[in-house]
Length: 410
Image (cartoon, rainbow, N blue to C red; front, side, top):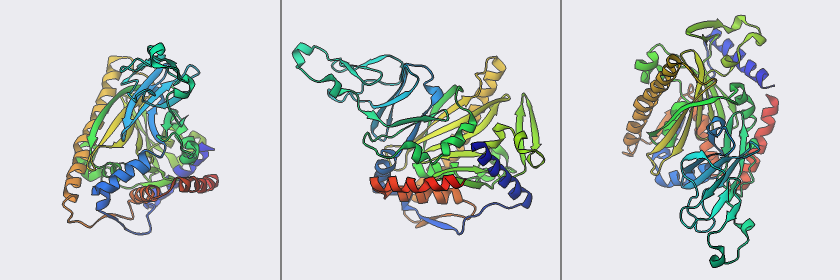
């Protein structure tokens, strides 16, 4: 079913490419400039979006083995992810139930965690198994003092968690079936080659760039080239979007050779799987996924974006994942070269521009910013940010329940 949907998308892209057209939004949309600079709104977005909605917190290959763990902080919430003995993933509030000190930091492999403050010990399934000097501390019910669990969901080689232990929003419902399409990347069993974290501008300023092909031949003229495409069609599944160039052609990398394929001349079953996932896939509110090749080896960069401490700050962890672990020196170097190139593109072009843009907007002398008819992805993104920021917890259930029938129509 997912492949059929991807084929339909591809045939639509081919038709638009042959006609020299693209899908356009109904009108040019204005967004208040204050949406990027208002500190009160920024704090509300962190609370209503990042601390309330499911977030993609790790690729599965970051925690491949039982006992693997990762601790991270998201908008002031300390999160601990652990891979269990049975292969499932658990997500916890990374706070000792004695005084709230984090029980883990960084990443690694461990069967238990001991708090560095008073020595309370927890299993990696969250169970409290040891209270230091229990004869002095006094009697407590250990079962009532386990680490607080967060809702967690693993699908398509990706891990989601909701930073609200009482959330009633089902993560699968929130994804609107989008994870079924993401399975086409076949991330299960992939290798995490490298990762790094970059500083960026306001989180929405940064995310706008992932939803925008319009800027590619201008801002990236010295990296991607000035003849690079600037059109994209958008496919939406709830707030999650895929954008891809309308064209009948695709490039398939085989070894060191690039092969231009005429998709219009191919039967549905002849179109390679990696071609069906071309373009940029975004997972609301903070993830971008795009395919790349280093030395002929298939890979993808997963960009994980979070708001920073201040309205004009964000940070992005870039995960470079690969279908196969490169083994020889030439392949390793080619993968590093590809990842380093992408750092230059994002850090020195996208985010450097975004920081200048944010600084200018903070002058308060521009009332609105514009999203053209050819920038439908940005229009949809900002509509969802506004909608979900102002939704109640009960509204969220209704909003995403209403999105499920639209998936059935696909």
